[in-house]
Image 1: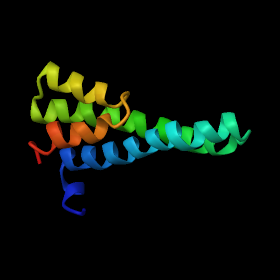
Image 2: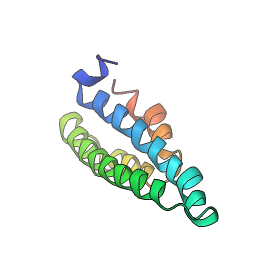
Image 3: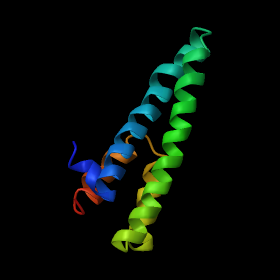
Length: 100
């Protein structure tokens, strides 16, 4: 894991994984709790964390685009992956591992 922190692509992969997990937690845990169990607090906490992680992910993608001279297509796919469930995991396997 410490090797991942040394490169921009490694940091993107870590942020992407955590952002993807937070998105899945929102979709499959906190939203059902909010609407079916009247428990909005977990959604507020995880939602805030996810928002911060989303912004960090977008910034990390932009930094990688600059550092690794990614094409517009690759950058667009990396950004699109952040709004699709399981998308960041796909991006890690198909887009980011090739750079690492």
